[in-house]
Amino acid sequence: MDLELMISSFPKLLSAAVITLKLLSVSLIIGLFIGLLFAILRLNKNVLINKFAYGYSYVFRGTPLLVQIFIIYFGLGQIEYLRTTFLWVVLKEPYWCAIIAFSLNTGAYTSEILRSAFQTIKPGIIEAGKSLGISSKIVFYKIQIPIAIRQSLPAYGNEIILMMKGTSLASTVTLMDLTGVAKYIISTTFKPIEVFIVAGGIYLFMTFIIHNVIKFLEKKYSFN
Amino acid sequence: MELLAFGDTGWGDELFYATLMTIAVSITAMIIGFSFAAIFTPLKLSNNKLLNFVANSYTTVIRGVPELLVIYLFFFGGTGAVMYVASIFGYNEYIEINAFITGAFAIGIISGAYSTEVFRGAVQSIDKGQFEAAKVLGLSKLTQFFKIILPQVLRLAIPNLSNVWQITLKDTSLISVTGLVEIMRQSYIAAGSTRDPLFFYSFAAVLYLLLTYFSMKLINRLEIKYSKGY
Image: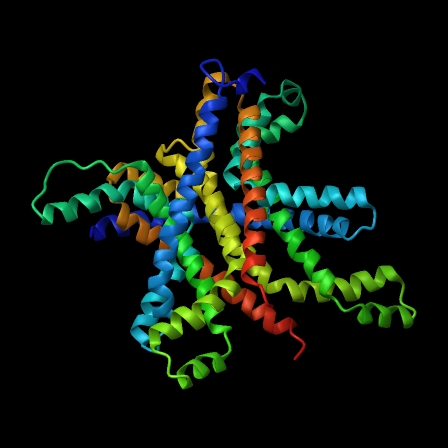
């Protein structure tokens, strides 16, 4: 055990963890909107729209995140036309490519979580709202969405933790996130165990915090 | 389509073998995972606090740390660890560990943590009366386990194990960082030499989709087979 290395690498890894958290929070916010949009599309009665939303979530859940990042970072740059549009400003940055891939990925999982939450809402609750003369828009925003959020909290908590682990793939497109810096230190010092303990410890600490925040929210939004 | 031709002119045969490699690594990792689950599930369910703690640390750490970090640990640390063990037995030559073994082991340990949780949940959801009835009938502990508990655990666990399989299959793409030539690595090589990353990575995505699609079909059949009578 090289304690000195563990202590000296801690601040470097901690500052890299900030990038991990940045990637995570930005992708989660964008992913939540994408997820909500596609969950609503999934509940649409139009078969075409329905199939489209299903296809999106099927493709993004059925392929590895690594492939998705590589297609966006290495693949899209190949299209000459894209290079002339304003999109190129975004797509040439590995940071934004990672964000796009993570958002689309977590969006697909979130849409499934929200869809099943919407579907488990008892029709009686919606009917009760309607019979009180509340417009269907308000029923949706004031009744269905809050219930769906509460229903989906445990599953969404898991998704946040999975996504946090997913951000480690940003290191494959040259971003120096927590895993990227850890790999760099390992490959220069050849002390994998020490670095793993420190970096893994930081990840576990973040998992612990997320887990408890979700638990707190679950309690807050439960019926009792 | 020329790019996918079999033989020297295209990448068809290379990608085909790479797909077989992905399947082989996934299955090996899944089996290693089951062996880990076979050890850690009883520890999780035991009444001994220390054994509980050991099993809980395993599942918590592995499920809370990115797969890539675990793979780096094995990739950079595996050789050192094996050489250390070998040196205890007096063997001091350099030992090179095969990328397949390192990869399958790393993914297997990850997969094992998820399988352990699945099996624990399945055992816990078996009605207590089943255990008691088996005891009352005077069945030995072994018969109890193999004839009463295990068949029920399998039935309950299959739907969740299919999720573990999907996760394991997708995680194997990460082994490409160690240089094992599976789908991802082969696509990377092909994309580099043809300068057509969009095509090859999209094709890799299609291969993964096909793998997940057909394995789901297969698992659904198993599910029907094991839920006979329910």
